[in-house]
Length: 354
Length: 186
Image 1 (cartoon, chains in turn blue, orange):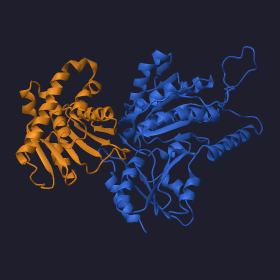
Image 2 (tube, chains in turn brown, green; image 1 turned 90 degrees about the horizontal axis):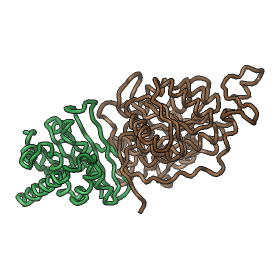
Image 3 (cartoon, helix red, strand yellow; image 1 turned 135 degrees about the horizontal axis):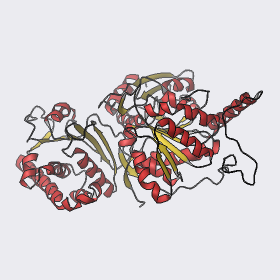
Image 4 (cartoon, one colour; image 1 turned 45 degrees about the vertical axis):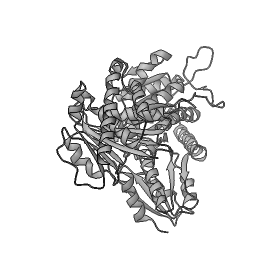
């Protein structure tokens, strides 16, 4: 049997990043993600990595931009209020077509909010949180194993498309411990060389990394180029998990930790004889719109479950078959009051029709 | 078989440690498990809770509304969580601090143990959490006592490994008291 470790979600992110060859980390502490910099600062010296606890979130995102511009695999991590501070830098990275990993172990807001789990950063993550009409690749793990696996995938996708990637977790996923089976990172053989990196021009032509385009027609062409990449991501990189779609009358959809709550609620519903299926987006951008269209050709009722007052449900409504009904259940987070499987089961019963 | 247990007490009573210990023991037995802690920003004195699921199949939700078992170490936990334990379930109550008898629910097995006094009897008041988890493992079979004891090396920092024999003694005491309680009931 492979070695199984009991690991905290935040540590799994750090382990995955180190395994994937990330050797530059820049960040500023904030609950509930500080285990990530703690782990990396302890382990980086052993692998020759560079860890900097910057003076602020804004400094750390711009250090990430710099390291990435030099062609290095690099990351930052924070939690919601800190991620807001990083938005300017993320926009500049998107404009400069720079890869890089931004981890958001989300907490509740707005403002300083609280330290409880929340999914209220969905809009910010998937719609481009800063200015200029860009997207980041957004991956939403739902287990400690996925915190590890998707961290590796985020680096690969980000490098391949030269689009910054975000791992969107929450304080439950960050703090909980589960079994993790670590595995060696294998770089995709077809990952393009970083022939754009400003790594010293000795012996070759000058390279420029920038987001400023003032020439006639330049910026329009640049934006069309970014748009084509987002379209390519939509066509090629969508990932989701499905279960029970063959006979489902009601489709439950949720991402991240709420998907875990949903899985138990669906199991309870199936035990009562209710035909309930699951569609869990793993990539929030690109969103699995075709999967929703296909699933709702069968299941005409959809229940979207979120730890907020309704965000992903908007993308679900845009994606389902025209004759499907979409219902929402969710609530904003509060101290010690996570929704339970029993609570969601009541909603499933309410919206279910044979 | 799925085992879900909710544990609650003051920060400092060792709730998170025995939650961790149970999860490490489950891993040692090759089972699936999730350990989900929730606690205040205080180091001591605030509320500390955690939910542990031990499963042979996939662990679904790490958050459980009505757990099959609960370990309640202080009066506030009793007040807040006793009513949530699923019918037919088990509740281990620290009678040293909790006056309420739990007689109000006839649909539960309630084991009242004077954990603080028992811990002092074997030499250290801080052992009360280990007595509780020993009783829990004995009554539910969620993990074996052997796995629980072996997992002490995983859950305790190395500097505290010298206390392992004392912790083993506490786990055994909890198991023995649980067995005695079953014997008395039968």
